[in-house]
Image (cartoon, rainbow, N blue to C red; front, side, top):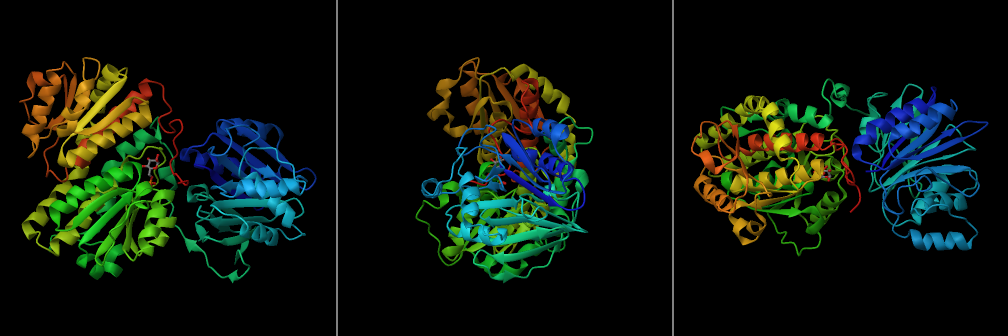
Length: 608
Ligand code: G6P
C-alpha cells in the first residue's frame, strides 16, 4: 500500500527518493509524488501510474536540492489522480506532507478549517493534515505537527517539510510504520525498511504517538505531547541481493524458485535431532506458558490465513491443543473465548497488516499470550507480541506471497512439534516429521524441474473463465491457496473447496469449460478425493490432478497429471503448493498480467 521515503543529506535528494520509491513499488500503488526543498525554488511533482512516469518528470525538471519527501499512493479517499497524489501542500504552499493511513475525523476537521478560510484542492483525507499543521505553525514545525496530530483520530505515518527549514524533515506515526535510517551526514525515513537498505544499516523504529525531527546525520524524538524520548539506533542485517531479480523475469518466479532455501533457512538451527524436538529461540521466554496452553487461536489474512488453516490441521494432529483459525478482520467482532491457557498466534509476512495488528491488540487486551510468526524483522507485529518466531524467508517483493507461505508452513510444523513433544507425540513420530521436513528443500527442487511442463498446462488452461481447486484435510488449505493465487495473479475466477463439500454446490457449475484442479495424493483421503473426481468426470469436467510420484492408477479419470514426491501427509502441503504457484504464475504471464504487482492489490495492507 502507500509508501513513504524521506531524505536529508549531502547528495541530490531526487535520485535517492526515486530509487526509494522504486524499492516500495512492490507494495502496490496507483500514483506517486515528490517534494524537494531547494532554497530558491522548492519543487513538487506528482503523477498517476508507475513511478517511471514521475521519474521522467523529475529528470526533466527537478533541482538538485539535498532534502525531500516522496510517496506512492494507494487510493482510499478520492480516486487516483494527480491532484489527489501526495505530497499535499498548505494554502501558502510552504508546507508539504506525505501520509500513510486514514484520518477518520477528516470531514469534521476539514469543515472547521474551511470555516477558518483554508482552501482544499484534493478529495483526500491527507490534505487536512497539511492545513491543520499550517493552522498550528508559528515558526516551529515539530511543535505544529505535535499540536495538529493531537486533534487527529485515525492512523498515520507522515513526513512533512516546511520551506522555512529546508534541511529538516518531521515524521510521526500512529498505527502506520515509520523507520528512521541514520548514516554519516545523512538521515532518511521510510515506511518500509527496504527503502533504506542501500544507504545505512543503522535504523530507529518510531513508536506510535512519537514525532521525530531529522537533520543530516542526526535525529531527535519526542512524544506527541512533547516528552523527549531517548532511543539509540539498531543495526539491521540487510540482504540487498535478495531485492534484485537477477536473471528471473519476475520477482514472483524468483521467489518461487527460492523456496528450497527459504525452507532450509526456516529450519536452520531449529531442530534438536537427539530429542526429536524443535528449538525455537524466539519462544523461549514464554515456553512455560506456551507448553501449558490448552487453546490456540491463529489470526491472519490472505495467504497467511491459509497457512494458519493448515497450521490448525498440523497442530491438531501433533498436539492435543484445541485450535481455531480466524480471519483477523473478523476476530474482533466475535465474542472471544479467551481464557487462562489461551494463546493467540498472529501470522504475517509483512508484520504490518492492519487487521492482524488490531486482532493481536484485542487478544492482548483480553489477557491472551500473544505470539507472532512474521517475516519482516522489526515490523510492528514483532514489537507488539509477547514472543515470536521469524520465518527468515528473506525479502519477498512479489505482491502475492509464495516463499513466505512455505516458510510459515515449515515453522508452524516446528511449533507443533515443540508443543507435541511436550505432550504425547512419541520420539519416533517426532523424528518422522523432522525427517520429512528436512527432505522438503530437495523435493521442492525436483518439483521446480517440472516448471516447463506446468507452463504447458497453463497454455492449455489459461483461457478458462473459471477454475475449481479441491482437496481434503491437509490439502484443503492448499486448494484455497491455489485458487487465491490464480485469482490474484491471472485474474481468473477460481474457488477453493473442500473436496467433500463440492457436491453441496459447486458441482452445479461443472461442465466441459469449467476445469478442476484436484489435490489427490496417496494419503488417508485418497479414495474419497478420487470419488469426488469421478463425480466431476461424470459431468464432463476437465481435471488436472496433483498426485504422488509413482501413482499410475488415475489413468483416464484425469486430463493432466503433475507428480510430487511422496512424504508425510502433514508435510505434503509444502510440496503441493509449489506447482499451484507456478501454474498461477504462468497463467498470469501468458495472459499479460502484471504478476509482480497485480491490479488493485497491495503487498502490505495497512488499512482495516
Ligand atoms: C495482502 C497480500 C497477500 C498477503 C496478505 C496478508 O493481501 O497481497 O499476499 O497474504 O496481504 O499479508 P501479511 O503480510 O499479513 O502476511
